[in-house]
Image (tube, rainbow, N blue to C red; front, side, top):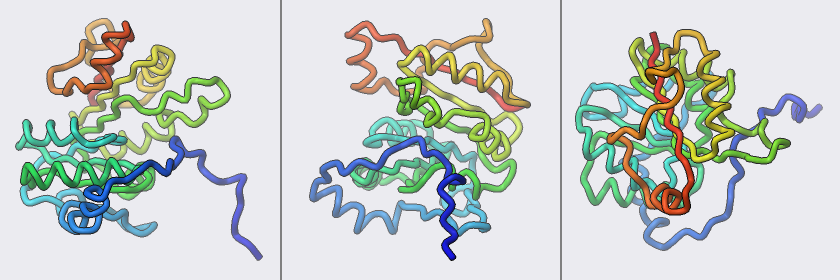
Length: 230
């Protein structure tokens, strides 16, 4: 008897694309992932974040770091924090590994896995912050169910966050920004840091990417949300 029950499958917020991977990225995955990579624990086991890093200090998770440039920059500029980047696309993971090796950073690790499953493996009150920058907006109404930001996702995040831990999201889709704001406002134990209870100006701590610079030139808006766990 098969145990496959499609009706109970979680709708994922991403589609794996077979993007072109360069030789150096592939080499980094082979040679550097054992140094800087993190495997997701088996179901039922926990991921003890502090055991991953040389120094015991707050851990920030970034989901969907793209090619890793922004995340590695943040890790370099904030040695008082540890970073765990999660990305499902192997070219980006390979590129991030190369950058980490180039900078010889000890406060950053990467995982090539479904972020939800990693969040499920975290102990309560173990996470210093969660970053989600420019996730796939799934802009067509029929695809909104694929958006990663929903109440189930936020329940996992807030469970893992320490008191005073942060949630920082950014998007260049206004409709998604409104959706994020609605979900975060409805999440227990989260407090909006924006004075008007809406969005914050882009903080200097979030590097300005080429993608965002291009958007600015085209007149696109960007919305940042920054909440703290009470």
